[in-house]
Amino acid sequence: MIYQNATEIVHDDVFLVLPGFLPGSDVFLKIEGLNPASSIKFKAAINLVEQAEKAGTLVPGASRVVESSSGNLGIALSIVCAIKGYPLTIVADLNTVESAVLAMEALGADVVVIDEPDANGGFLHKRLALVEDMLRVDPDLVWLNQYKSRANVEAHKDTTARSIDRELGPIDYLFVGVGTSGTLMGCLEYRRENRLSHRIVGVDAEGSITFGGSARRRYIPGLGSSRLPEIYLDDGTFHKVLVPEHESVVQCHHVARAYGLLVGGSTGTVLAGVRRMQDEIPPGSRVVVISPDLGEKYLSTLYSEQWLNGHPTLIKERSNV
Image (cartoon, rainbow, N blue to C red; front, top):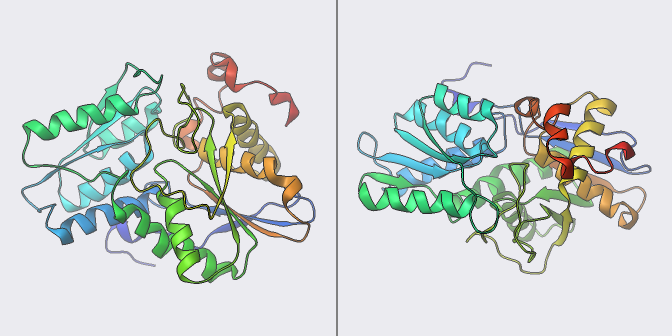
């Protein structure tokens, strides 16, 4: 197939069966890393930019873009902005893997790395404070704001959730990782508007506040937040699971060895959420797990014995894979 530009290359119909992951049930891993940005954030980035253009907020030839990202959205926006000609600044942090920073810079983005944690032990509040400082001094700078924009939710309602329904038909469970909550909110809206009956499970990392816990330092980028995203709405229609980060590492290594697939930390977290609920899932269920990205970016971290040994909280009980 011939594409006119990289934003058209969105493979939204790839599912990998995981035999034996839940004995007696079918588990389908929805692989979202097969696009130029290598993550589910590509769909959000495209819609964030296109909707800002339609609203007149983003003006070709005049506007510059800024966004806070721990990696994947930054890479995705770097691609979209390179194609459309928007100068881009990404505010990242020490949890952003080096390969992601290098990718953003190679695509033409300026990357500012926050290297001091905030009072919660994370970096998000300081990232956002810098974005707001930059907006105050530059009237041509546009913050797409993935934490607040409806375009983030609509991207997943119109693509991610729709593709699951189209490709698999009726399912029983859908497991979704929660960071900005765009994917979760989009899947919930699609289920409601189409009167579907499957159970949706939001999976977050311990140390995130989204489900009501207390904030603390986390090391795996992607899921979790030390600040409640504006687009997040807890309407009581989904189940919540919190996962300690060492369980995410366990599942990343398990999938690599058992199924020959390197997945990112977010995918490991969501799969750990499935494990935590396995006694509640009846045999014969059709279970879908959204895999936000693949694991190549994390070879020097999640898949590195040296890096893991430097983060003892991440290797607890790894022998139980």
